[in-house]
Length: 147
Image (cartoon, rainbow, N blue to C red; front, top):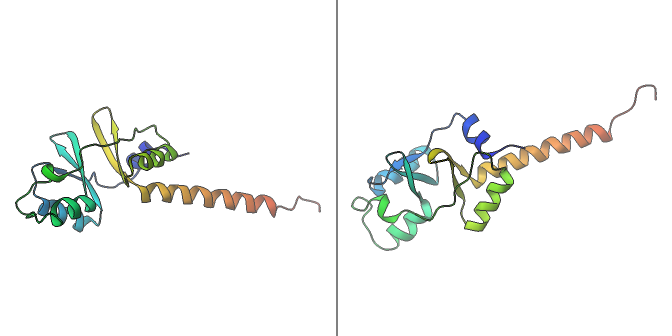
């Protein structure tokens, strides 16, 4: 069973993060260039929040704020649930379900290791189920030698 730490450490993906003082426009461009729906907001090395497409829509666009004038620190989600590197994928999904969110920062102490999306966890689940199905098929269709 994969852990959240193995997903973020073994992948060669970028640590998606933006400084809390960056404008919403800058963060939106950053997210668009990387085709991601959320980005971790940092103050130096410390994780202080998460900025998602939902935050952009609800706290900026719908309220008529200027994306070039407001910082992500002003409109980010600050009440975060974090995953631990040793958490299983099921534990990650459970944390997301409880928090009603689709992105989970993975922290080791105060060190930001990466951001896991619900899609990442579902891909692991599908891969594991496909492997189990392959093994069951092999078992069912096995013909012992000499028959």
